[in-house]
Image (cartoon, rainbow, N blue to C red; front, side, top):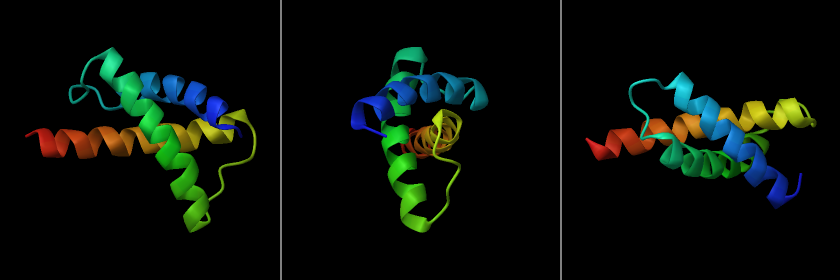
Length: 80
């Protein structure tokens, strides 16, 4: 998927991750920004270690959401 596609998916992933990490999110704007970073991390990281969620939109969204959740947890850990 192109970098623009990953960024757009990252916006949705940040929105979903904000609901999954309820109570530890940073507000919807920061969650969307972290979602974009998580999308880049998820698409790169999971392909690097060989985990494939599928090549379609749903697989990319799952990887991006997982990356966004990881990013939100890490940022929250260093925030405290």
